[in-house]
Image 1 (spheres, rainbow, N blue to C red):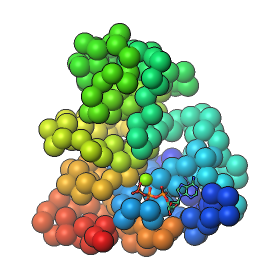
Image 2 (image 1 turned 135 degrees about the vertical axis):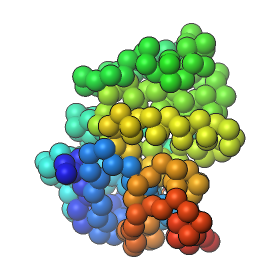
Image 3 (image 1 turned 180 degrees about the vertical axis):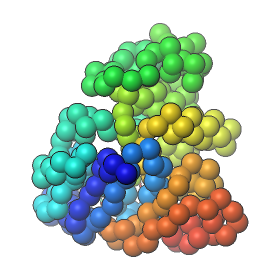
Length: 234
Ligand SMILES: Nc1ncnc2c1ncn2[C@@H]1O[C@H](COP(=O)(O)OP(=O)(O)OP(=O)(O)O)[C@@H](O)[C@H]1O
Ligand SMILES: [Mg+2]
């Protein structure tokens, strides 16, 4: 199986604050991996390291078998990795459609273009010419997911995409994530909502204090949920 992304013995910092302590992980093509763990354990820092927004002082990020010692946002994009960042980061001065087209700036060849995104999220077509930040929280999250898909990525990093959203929107996103997976794109889902992890992910990685401390298969059952929840309970 092709490994799309691998982190090897990664040590990451913000200034002098040492956040990731020898972190290892890998994601195969088409796989759905969840990264779970309590607040502040360093989940977002994993994404920031992949994008070059946290300083990796040792270790490697390996894209498609190519080790990179100084990853940058464009390195990830070049290797087909798109991101849905925590807090969504919709560009305020741009319309919904312009925000979607931003995602296409680094696009590879693939099935996702505006019509397919609008089919997935009809509300985005209805609101195509309104400012992106005029949308509700749930709609902005759809926009962030649509923007990532416009890159036709082989892997999408999703950092707490359902944070603060109503259950009905979470259900809709779960459906979309499963459609995206069925179409062959791998997902790396950082999530605190374990019921979403059960529905979307194949494998989980649990973090504590800046490294991966446990991993396993996600089993969609009561025991499976219990198994996940013990890694995030305060
Ligand atoms: N820019 C920064 N400068 C210094 N320290 C930071 C910075 N960003 C985050 N941290 C610290 O790094 C640690 C890990 O933060 P990170 O955001 O990766 O956690 P997280 O697991 O994503 O948390 P959450 O579940 O709340 O999103 C925390 O102690 C946080 O305070
Ligand atoms: Mg975070």
